[in-house]
Length: 75
Image (tube, rainbow, N blue to C red; front, side, top):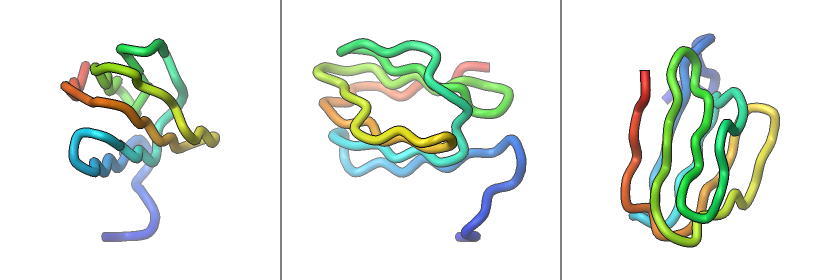
């Protein structure tokens, strides 16, 4: 896997249904205990679940932890 991403692309890595690491994201659009929606290029990615928390947030990456029950790619 290349260490850099193409412009407008992102990388999503899941560890079971308890943790997700997303690189190349453009910002948080929605955040509460059951939903985290993140800008990802021309789309958005929505995590749904219980007790969701953003554990780490930088300018272009984030870590979501909790009980993740669904991941949606919204165009």
